[in-house]
Amino acid sequence: MTKAGELVKGFRNSTVPRERTALAIWFWEIDRVLLSLIVVLMAIGLVAVAAASPVAAIDRSTAHVAVNPLIYFYRQLIWVLIGLPVMLVISMLPRTQARRLAMIGAAFFFVMLLLVPLLGSTINGAKRWIDLPGMRFQPSEFLKPVFVVTTAWLLSLRGGRDANLPVIPLTGVMTLLIAVLLMRQPDFGQTVIFAACWATLLLLSGVSMRAIGALGVAALGALVAAYMFYENGRQRINDFLGIGVSHDSGPDQTDLAFRTITNGGFTGVGPGGGQQKFRLPEAHTDYIFSVIGEEFGLLACIAIVFVYLAIIVRVLLRLLDEEDNFTILAAAGLTTEFGLQAIINMGVNAQIFPSKGMTLPFISYGGSSMLALCIGVGLLLAFTRRNPFMGRHTVVKWSGR
Image (tube, rainbow, N blue to C red; front, top):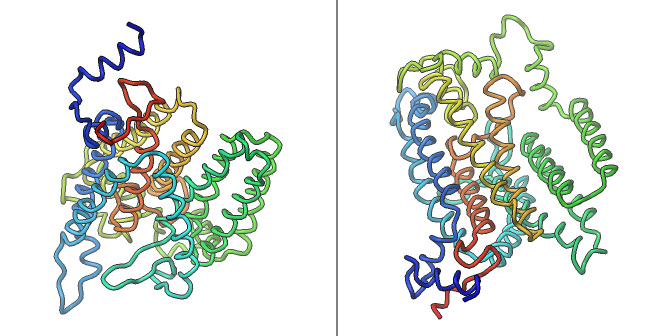
């Protein structure tokens, strides 16, 4: 019997049910280690939001109406219970269908981003959300993962029969339009994420180093221009550097975050025992990493960093023997988006970067953030699925035949 025949026989004699249902095939093909790490982050996030929820609840309370201290924890639990099934359903899609879903989503959420200036609501000086009956969502959060997949597919055409298509200028125009729309909100942090993901995909797609160098110079020029002409960004950078800040004005947001994250030492003051967190703005979203540091200690922060690092390394290891160009680009791009967002948020809390107003993936409170991340990871799980019994390039249909 040939080796291929032995593999097929082993697959048939394995614990996978003979009817090969969709659920059974998904269970054997999915990257269960990656899925487990994501679930761990969700669990950590629920604990962290429970610790930070009283701070946000006090800010929302008034003299006549008291808010439940754990209201944001209960809401986050609902978003997790909604987002996790969405992630699992998307991860069951074949690669082609997952790619098509992402491309349709990219068109839809780009239109939603265009409508933000007309239909959006302003919160904390930024117009980033669209209000619908009973809910509010942020189009840019949902656009990130589907933009990455769409860009990966366009750039993957360079190596095939459509090699002459102007995909690099096309993706560049897409990124520029999104950047202009985001800067009008204003949202400099999300602009950096989109631009960085596009640059990463260009590098992986095999563009020349001369082009990469030109992009680097252009990025530097864009940062200088943003500082000179973008008032919101200039103010945050000046506050971070202490330029033009009065000593009587008190510490800025990054100073407060750093004091909070170091207040608990290595082991923390204990759940619910943090006091410095009550001075933080947006303790349940942008600065939740500092709340974790105060109540659970720097050791807990280090453990979270290793969880994020494990996720990134796991995806990269999964791609080592992958041969499909689109899959490599899409998975690497989604991992770049996920990892860069985590790095920026933790860097702001550690006083390494200026304040960006960016959530910590799967840990910060937020419905848009949670659902968008679940969509992105669902796509990532769909693209990295492989059958362990019949080879990495074998596709088993769910027909039951």
